[in-house]
Image 1 (cartoon, rainbow, N blue to C red):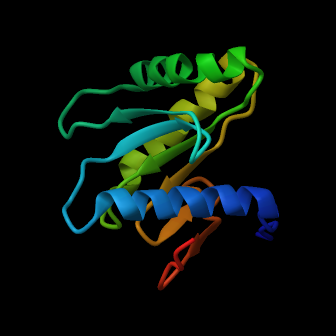
Image 2 (cartoon, rainbow, N blue to C red):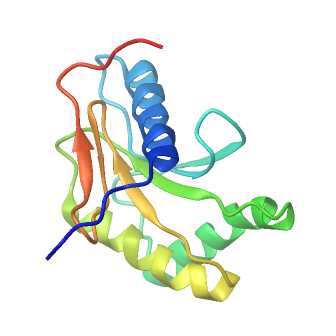
Length: 137
């Protein structure tokens, strides 16, 4: 499979999401969060509590509610999941499925990336980027 390069502007936005997550996570372990918006600007977040039952329908409704404010302003938001590097692929794919359902219902294309302290990646395609050390901006 040939992977197309990520556009430069999107790469910068995703790097900002990684930097923000690294700055807020610190050394302690944080719960995973779902974020909708533009990193560094208007962002809505939802804490994902372990053991809380979230099926596909509930995840889709949650995403739609989080996206509507942005879409009302003609802005298609980025959707990203922040977690520790030891997170679960099953959870990533469950949120990716919900994003895949919410987008057509909202009439837009939504994409999901998973962000850790040193990387981002798309759980559906495997496209991503990892840094050993992040430079301060």
